[in-house]
Image (cartoon, rainbow, N blue to C red):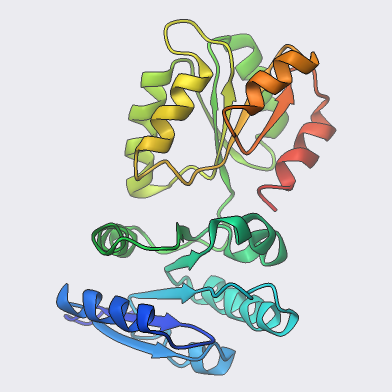
Amino acid sequence: MAESKVKRIIIVSFQFSVVMKSIEGQLADGGYMVATIEPKPETVAGYTEDASLFILYLQADIMDEYKLHCLKNIAEIFQRKKMKAILIGEHKSKSDFLQAVPALSAFVWMDRPVDADILKKKVDETIARPSLDPNRKNRILIIDDDPSYAKMMKEFLKDIYKVDVVTAGMQAMTFLERAAKMDPVDLILLDYEMPEMDGPQVLHMLRQKEETKEIPVIFLTGNGTKEAVNRVMQMIPDGYVLKSTPREELIEYIHKILP
């Protein structure tokens, strides 16, 4: 993809709005050339040669069958052309949408409403990253203080995902900060009970940082009692699995989040 001196951002949306007009203006003020187009695959394809980044602005009714069909075709274009993209949508729709259009799960997601400064930062970071590799495996980070268990989990998953392991919370934060700049983590498997900094504390830190707050987190727990599970879910992770879960069930569970 050839990039011009003035980086070009293409906003793709089924409906124009005052909010989108505001986003256009904010990005233009940041030095970008911005245009908004309809989500027709043939229209999108015409902009792939000189666009630095696409922004997919997803309205509340994005689960409409026709719209999903269009976006699946657009996702295939993005993968084939190794485009960069940011998805902006409602947090409550994120899981269902990415399961319906799994080809878009590798791209950056931002919840609405969007803070202008955060959007500008995300745009800068995304454009600076290497182009998407269509053969890229989703990346999983295992955070567990038991190296034997972590090694076993890595063996379970390594044929399907790119898997990294760290054994402490602060080590994980440093790792994620570095990874965000080059090859971001798509899912975290987090031990609920760890010394020094336990799982809930790590999750709290993840949710406080812009680079990590959108990464899905699944708690790993060795205690399957009702009370223990309720305690885990009070932290509102994206899910939990027992450490005794068989490999096939674990992979099936992860597939619900990372299609």
